[in-house]
Image: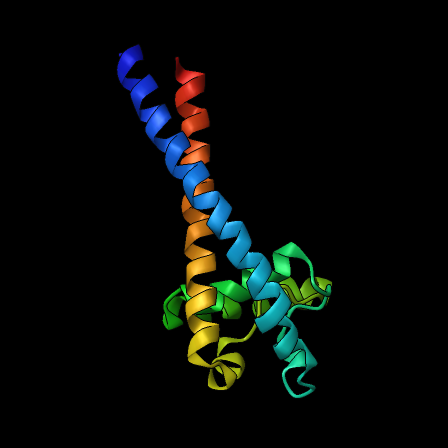
Length: 134
């Protein structure tokens, strides 16, 4: 059993590190190009995160391009009902306001950045769990 967990851990660790480097590079590229472009548009500023160019804002913004539209709309609705009303801070961006202004480049880079980061983080978390079980 320990040998199987060790092999799973090595595969997940390799996958996590392999996806982490391009994921971080694409997230940095996305935040430097696409996120700033949308932030500069005054008509879109109320629909974006309010804390500036932070990693959570950028990751939530890439989620618009990485997740299906129904899930993005649902997350935005839950956020507006629960978080924004209580704390008056907006972390999740409105997909209906952002997507009509997005180019194909924005969508591809956002999609790749979101999923590479999610795959790498999930792989590393499961690898840590396998290591703890040994």
